[in-house]
Amino acid sequence: MTIYYKERAYFNGKDLALSVIGGRWKIAIIWCLLHQSPLRLSEIQKKLPSANQRMLIRQLKELEDDKIITRYVYSVVPPKVEYQLSEIGRLLEPVVTSICNWGDNFNDFLEKNANKTSVE
Image 1 (cartoon, rainbow, N blue to C red):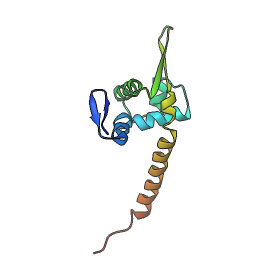
Image 2 (cartoon, rainbow, N blue to C red; image 1 turned 180 degrees about the vertical axis):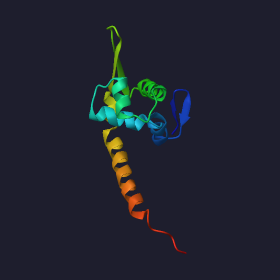
Image 3 (cartoon, one colour; image 1 turned 45 degrees about the vertical axis):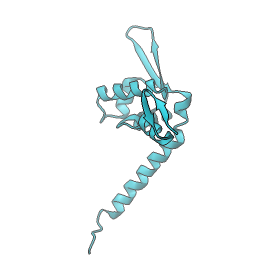
Image 4 (tube, one colour; image 1 turned 60 degrees about the vertical axis):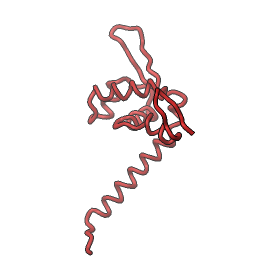
């Protein structure tokens, strides 16, 4: 079964999903919005201090284009923009939670095995 999305072909839903949520900061952005929503760009930056603004804006734009998040622009001066998960984006909660839990488990594994050396 071939899936066509944004002028690209995907062999299955897994490939499509990885294309949509893959990206250095996308899972982290979704995680932030799962725990507090809506958020402004500056609030997301505070939660992800290692990410530069340009990269966050790019990843937010991609998530918005894929309908994972919604962007609300308020007509006030200065402009106010807020981001929140869309209905389909909220369905990512178990996926993102599982990835974060796995990351914690992997970190524990690494710490336990840091001092072990392989003797062969």
